[in-house]
Length: 117
Image 1 (cartoon, rainbow, N blue to C red):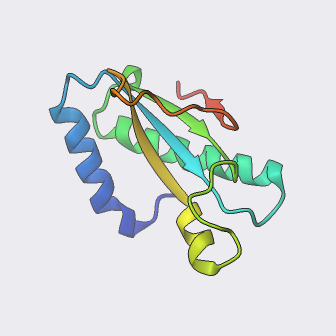
Image 2: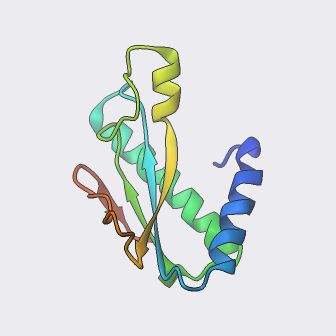
Image 3: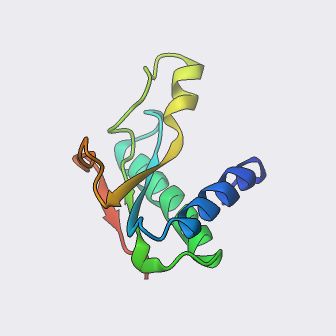
């Protein structure tokens, strides 16, 4: 389930992807904090990424332009020792995959791919 407060951001992301046909592929990544067991966190992160990718597809973004990964708690932005850190780690990220940025595409180590079709 996508939170209502995320809708405006998703509308902007979808519009940006739609307007930039030169971006051939985007990776949607779901992430969690470290509360709960690893398997549940991986499942939650996959559901999070799948929900966002489905929202984008339902909004007109071709499935061929998207890939999705669940990363669980494996790629934290902040420490999980504070409420603010855990909140920062519960997120969805978007990465341009094709064309690859000059800095390269971030590794998917620790993440698991999700079937979108």
